Image: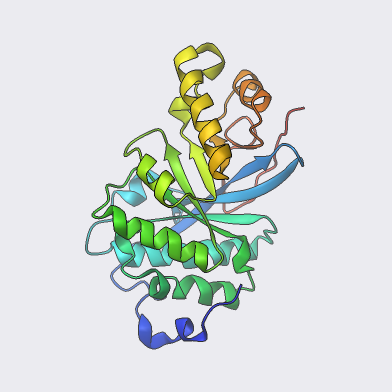
Length: 254
């Protein structure tokens, strides 16, 4: 990936890496995204945890407007650092907070610097934006996604089908990946209405050139229904549970 050297200049954002304004520590659990066609791990999603493995809800409950930017930046750096320490060779998927990014080309600086410092290939980084955060500006999100893609990163829309449905984002700036929310997936083999919605989304994504990830898979029946419709990227307890500061063993069905 070719990145302008000036983005590494400390003068742009000197408080990012040290996490000024963040008065608690974080770590990560990792959950794999499986490519069932190649029977390999496509990526690991970095799921924020407390320093001692406290659940994400406890950590996110401490994030507010005054420390959101520092939290977002520290998450990026520590996810890359831990992935490198664990010898991760698959992609690394990092959730980010759009409202914490004021200018994509500046706020990405710490990610690039961390990747360089910890010898982690930036082309293997995916940025996920969740539907759980209300946006202050749709145009701001679109500019972030477009900037990240222009820099060579992959971007994903997480939890699609829950929270703030972003069909406008899907149409205006198609992501590289779209992750179907578990509420759409749960017992899909038995729910005709969910099947109709997911069939439509799969067709839309194929036409837009967007890869689909089915997340929250817990049963072989859910997996079989989606696999028969051409889905190849999966995430959920059926394959592996998140492992705190470890890369878990995976199960890949036939």
